[in-house]
Image 1 (cartoon, rainbow, N blue to C red):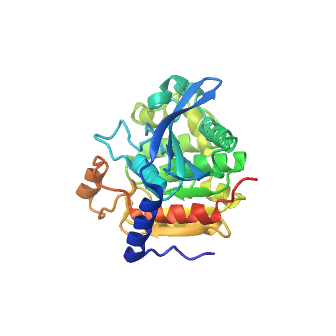
Image 2: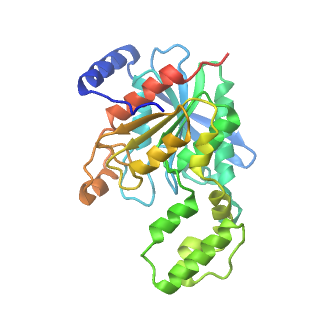
Image 3: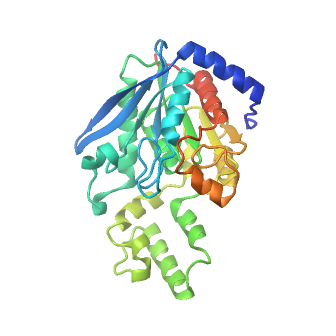
Length: 325
């Protein structure tokens, strides 16, 4: 196994000075993926002056998180993915980030909740990779997945034979295991028993109806087909089967995903690289693990993303993302 990537401040400053001088400011342009059920809207960011750059597809996390890394459930903006794309462009890496179906500019392509399946997100990401691989402007196409987007990215990278894969704040556990951990000790005994009964049924592919009203937000019948499709996948198992170079990145002040998950992903994939970013939280900002500061960072786009994160990914993609023939 490779050792965690060590990054020193002096080399970071020099690296960014060189990268900025070489690349200049990036240019953002709209890009659209046509699917049988509607358009998926994205943003292409090209580094200025780069000839046939490597490109990375950036996949957002769970829920109503848009291409820039902002969620309608959280006040304000953090612009985590937008700022990551800008940093990578300064380092000579092109990116495409997009709204998943049903979100933002891709809202019209979203199916009814009962028809949504986890595989739809993976298929969409794989279709983006295939389209971008066919574009002669790019030397290679890698996949970067954040949070839940890490698992989506694993499936898509393997399906579309991406040049490399990067997981940021991805979990190693299956979603049902994670949900059990999150609910542990937080429900009355009768509801805890019901929750376990429902989870076990969904893991077996069985719809549960009716659901106790107190658990309807989590397990309403219309969302259960999606949960069944999601629970089938264990990220630690999926990353083990990837055939392209892999980088696992994790911040050590992330209050949503801990370093244990990153270590398990890294350990599951022989030859994977690991970058633990000191002081980085779930939205890529350098913030101490104090609740008030963490909450504030989720709605503050003026906070820059970690330069160590950008450098770790850019170095990996330049070195390990193999150009297409």
